[in-house]
Length: 265
Image (cartoon, rainbow, N blue to C red):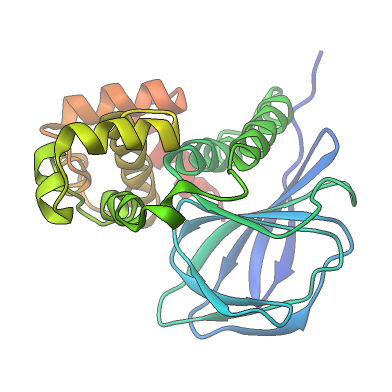
């Protein structure tokens, strides 16, 4: 019989965290309060930081300040010195400790894949059972694969409109159709569709769908709005559509997820 893993609690940045061991990985959910400033520091192992909710600024080494929002993964090698500063809103993120040689350099990547796997990993910390550690380990490997798909010279550096298109999809609410997205960046829809799939490995619609269901998960977790209100705010046409997508993504209904989330401190 496989025993359910224990969720351990700790403290980081003034907030209580949850931690889970999953194979070779140590996974920690960090809830950081508004206005928090963490001075330059480093971690002994290499780490992944997956931003689930909120936004913060980070300086790595002597580099420029970067802002990280939801659906962003930041990989840092062992010993990388960094400092963090939060604004007026709290931040929730997952910190994954890897082996010391897992990450060779700093990589920052934002995508619907990060939203998809990060949201599912967060859900596993809520619905703890005998398979949680196995599922969590597999999701970390998916996140590492998503990270390694990031080219060294990303096409959006040559085509800034592609980065603009991606960021518009991350807006809440984002463009509802490919035509409205094309109109906002001044490009032909067919050209956008081809370039977007070539860069991100999925259609614009698939990308937006992953973001939408993760947006609904965050709203279920952090608000007391009704399911119909959340469906509308996340961009669904009705509650049944939300329920169908949510069950497909997370393996349980929106109502069941919310009930489990309320039991977690």
